[in-house]
Length: 336
Image (cartoon, rainbow, N blue to C red; front, side, top):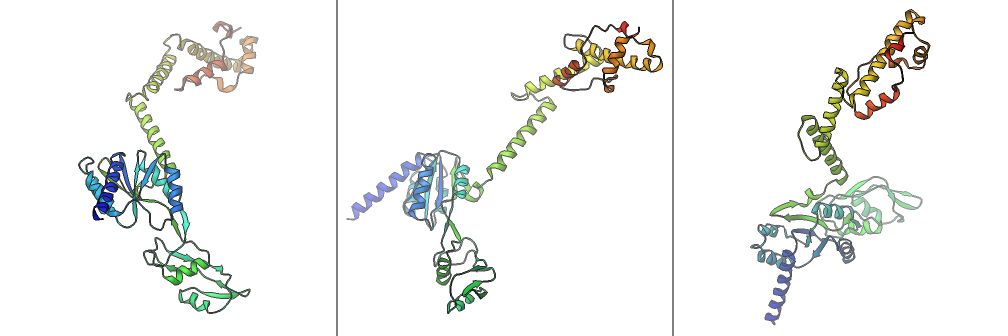
């Protein structure tokens, strides 16, 4: 009989060892106060992402000891196998799994003798219970009561069990009677093991939305630094070249260096300057300016008087050219 049991134990441990060797990330999850339905639902949801393997703690420890040569540092998990727990084996991101498990907990009732994971609070409410001996019971728990509409009403909020204390039978029965489920149940990471490192369960819970925003901000800041400091990378090179082209074009326009890109802008700048001079002359003697130029001055916005071409993007420079197209206005035609 003992041989059969021994063979069965060996088979269980060997199967556990095979599972441990099949996944790069090995976690321990708590399964306290979780009913079979909840576990089955989680297994179903995670079947593509992870595998939950349950066994007695002694078998789990034997399996870890059996693979320590193949998986360096795996024995560190042994001391964390306490209470009801299971292996969670995965190829995927443990942070993602931890966040999923944290977000998918379900309400759970309090059980007599259970250690409270959080304060158990009863808030003001109509209990629906008629007056009677139960009033003394409620008051013994520190609850203030009054009679309202022929029923007992709890008038003030009170903590009936503090975090870390055991739930007594009276509290458990009262909570059930009031349909209060003060706890949450579901799988939760105790610890995760990856590449020889241990990551505590609490450190696996992150705000993915905030994390993504911070990552995007870091990326854009690094790219901006690379572009402005002239650090060439795969991402910055195109922007650095575009910046250099823009500054070179601006320099050409403002110093009168003629090339295929700067010539239209230089001519546009010359026309703008000429119109400004013509405007000043017209203020002194309108007869000195040809009718065609006077029409041009009348239709041109005042902001088009001489202005230095600023450092701006290619697109902005092109828009300026379109505002003041080159017409057949020779410089000599400014003066009639």
